Amino acid sequence: MKKGELLYEGKAKKMYATDDPDFLIQEFKDDATAFNGKKKGTIKNKGIVNNKISAFIFEFLESYHIPTHFEKMLSDREMLVKKLNIIPVEVVMRNIATGSLVKRYGLEEGKELEYPVLEFYLKNDALDDPMINEHHAVAFGLATPGEMETISRYGTKINAILKSFFIRRKVRLVDFKLEFGRFKDRIVLGDEISPDTCRFWDLDTGEKLDKDRFRQDLGEIEKAYQEILGRVLHTGE
Ligand code: ADP
Ligand code: TMP
Ligand code: ASP
Image (tube, rainbow, N blue to C red; front, side, top):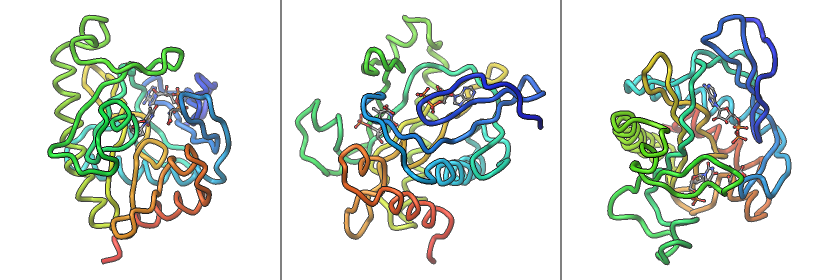
């Protein structure tokens, strides 16, 4: 597949056209941002690590019949993906109270939730990604009620699958963000699943192994990302 023109450069990835209009090349950068772009930095080899982690997880989810945009790995930093019409709604799944959930609702930090929480945020950096619900998404013309139902079902299923995937690797899947889009009128999981978009805590020590190390200036960021890659690739069993 030939790499064509750069269609979009985002905060963490570049999207290139290919010679087939149905496919894009997604290239992962080392650039890191937090707080919707207000904090900027780089994390050495993050692009390589996130490409490998995302590829592995997308293939794993496909084996559970979750449709994803992943086609194949092209290089250390590049994967071939289906070109989606992205729905500008960030889907967040939470198992443990932390981050904005604790700020917004005054919950106890680190407490396991009685039941997973599904949230929607409007994907709009200028507005700081405000929280919305499925009615807003439909009323704003972003998705149909049926599409929101499918997205919620996939979100819940992905959480159940990945929670046990990570427990086997001695990692607690605290929370994570997903993006979905349309491919030939079907809802497909897009973007990435990586330490940039998930919170991972070591099961035994509680050590943070994700982008919170960058957000909170905790140091040893590269090491944490490598640790997650190692555990994703090998269960240790
Ligand atoms: P951002 O736009 O938030 O800065 P990135 O740097 O991760 O984010 O850029 C990747 C962009 O590509 C995102 O806007 C994401 O919604 C979009 N995207 C992800 N997967 C696909 C896909 N398969 N087809 C089209 N767009 C995609
Ligand atoms: P939050 O607690 O800050 O709302 O984050 C919830 C989860 O979503 C966490 O795993 C980080 C992820 N996330 C993103 O991937 N992108 C974002 O823009 C935000 C705000 C969170
Ligand atoms: N993804 C957002 C950013 O890159 C917010 C975050 O991850 O904290 O700025």
